[in-house]
Length: 596
Ligand SMILES: Cc1cc2nc3c(=O)[nH]c(=O)nc-3n(C[C@H](O)[C@H](O)[C@H](O)COP(=O)(O)OP(=O)(O)OC[C@H]3O[C@@H](n4cnc5c(N)ncnc54)[C@H](O)[C@@H]3O)c2cc1C
Image (cartoon, rainbow, N blue to C red; front, side, top):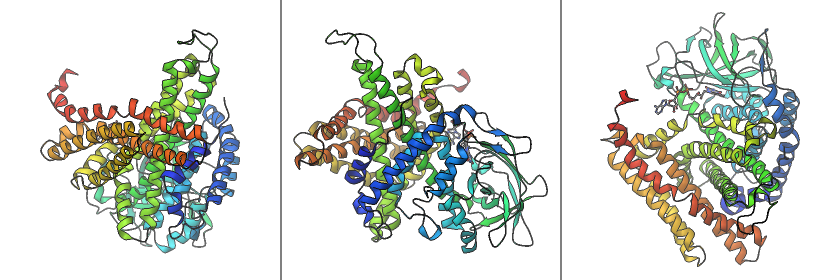
């Protein structure tokens, strides 16, 4: 297995040229993100990822987690030491507020760091990602007292955190949630019910775990508008923060999964012995709104998992393709050449790199939008980026996880038969990646959200705003004598997007089922266009550096060629997706379900 090498040059290029790190560092509260500090953070994170997380990834996969007879859940060897080091180094609170013990860095800085954790040990990364999401939810909805009691411990990682939505009958459909919360005379609640698939729901890595649980109050309206949110600690917490007795929450089983074996996925039973004590967070019946904050953070984080896994798979495949000798060179007839010289293998490797860079540029740019939306002093500017974040969150999650899987699939293919055996390590990436299109809302659910809430509900306004920005890049590409072909490719993809969006908007009311039949193809379409947009911006930035005589010529030239490759091989898929959006519904409706 090859060593992980943090892609610092690519990261730095995207941060400075595309995601606007200088602009972000000028925002109020982001002043600490100086170029030197950002470079030092990335370098240290790269060392931590390569030196601490990567070496235990394989054993995490092989050993997995165990539920002991006494109800304890054990994690793989090395997990505790790595977690202690991770926590003590302050990585967990990198982008969380300094007021509660975090480092207060912009999300833009935390995103490449998170990519490195995902690339080297995705099962481990599941733990801090939950703390980060929970902290964001508590920041928005918790009372001052709750914040003071829980946030410093969640931000530092001294206590673990979980997100409890799923129940056996309530997966994608949270309206079916049954866990109930009964009010008590002292203002607390007692919770009864069962939650399944809870990541890091039980473990011994931290002395306490803060469960954030969706449940129903006795008089709650039916559906998602009757869900409230509760803090349910594993050990009860006294007013001074010290730990009291064990709460009535039990892990009754853990799942045996195809991947991320190092992350315990637990079934938690609440209230078997009189009720689990919980505390309401925010307003009654408004729990899902808060949970959405946590889910949006987590969804973005899962998109980054797609990127991280894809990048590591690319690194594996590139090294193997350069090393494995097979066949003759198709042009020279020479034998003894590594497989990367075969056009098909080169195509796969290049396609992996193009997709990794497209995802990276899109996710970092979106991370910058988060920061602008939160901190820009001009409300109009902040509002624009808030709309962009909302529109593109399903793409960041849905498209980047699907592409992440595709890239891992190509990596495995490049390994040939050695990819199918476990010892090369690529199979673990293929298996680990498979969950990311499922949890935090499946791709189908992301696509429904994109069409329903993000486009139809506002009559496509933000999408049109985005298309104007996309077309501005085409215009700049056309002005550059050398990049006209990239501009043509991007323009074709944008035309396809616009025509599919027009069709959806025209038919969304009368033929919703037909429109939703094309929801996932539309998500792919928007993702493909956004990926092309980012690579086109990258080509422009590389050209302007070349013109200024700055930087490594070969590297910058390769970024221009990467954009060309994307437009030639991936961009045209936008046209097929657009056609599918328009045609899928009719074909589905005509098909008789009883004939399946
Ligand atoms: C390893 C792992 C970790 C997890 N961690 C957590 C966690 O920490 N906390 C937590 O609360 N949950 C967690 N989950 C649960 C996860 O979020 C759910 O599995 C996921 O939301 C899908 O729900 P489901 O499994 O019930 O599938 P279902 O909802 O039954 O979906 C099955 C299929 O039907 C499709 N479908 C369902 N409804 C629709 C619709 N309206 N439109 C179109 N298609 C639809 C889906 O896209 C999917 O393809 C985890 C799951 C796993 C496997």
